Amino acid sequence: MTARLGLLLFATASTVILGFTFLRLPGNSLFWNSLQNSGHGIVFAALGAVFLAVVHRRLKKTMPNALAISFATLFLLGTTIELAQYATGRGAALNDMVMNSVGIASGGCLYGAVHYFRRRNTALIRAIALLVLGTVAMAWCIRWPVAYQIAEAHRPSLPVLADFENVGAQLFVSGTGSTQSVRIHEEWSENLTHSVKVNFQQSQWPNIAFREPIENWGQYSSLSFSGYNPHDAEITIRVRIDERRPNSTEINHMTVRQVIPPGEFTVALGFDIFKADAVRQGQLHSMNFMQMTGFMVFLLGADVETQGEIVLYFDEFRLQ
Image (cartoon, rainbow, N blue to C red; front, side):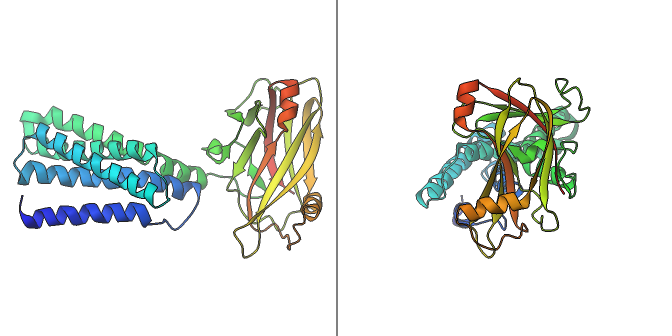
């Protein structure tokens, strides 16, 4: 290996380490966070293809040896990045290591496909197989940012916040201490559209959370939704909406208690009730509902512990 080539590889490795350790993406959202993770796969796919080409063509290694050397070297580079992130407080993640490895495999396969295509008929099947494997591996790396972009493009517009009919509706739904299922539920026979079934399990605050809604609710005065309670008894839920304070990164959490009856139900909660809760908590900033960051429905852990697992169905979250 020439000194120039060695210096170039060292500079590339150093740049990648510094980039992954200190570079921040322009947004802190589900899409940008998933893109940051996918970036490991994309970058290491490029590194895998380039490094393999160097080892195979410049250093004259056989393809199997070049693959082994490239994967081992780049895996070590990925480990170094995670250690650097851990040392600087950014945190290390096993998922990043997996993404690095899949990216290396993708880049190696794509380089191998080009190499065997050049040999034409003697290795055409091998080239096609490697091309397919490399493409599938890269598709796996970028699946989440692509899914979020597609889901975002198909989200409903206000006044609807969530109706679960759009593509990828569940991508913006999460929960702690619960599981969620979006489909047409036969148990809620009166509702013939998609809804979300939530199994609230035993935990401190089992909830279903709706992330990254359209921010500006300023022209509306209430939040409503429909649902179905299959239990024989009333269930007490809490509805929380989150608003970013003006010119601040701090979030106000405003919560309203609501008792829902057995069977079908409809809930409409005026913003004045949420404002009253904010005042009660001493959150006296000007509340204009124009920087909303999310909303959730949650139960008290004690209620779930008393009644066992609680199942509720929700649909048509909208502003009025």
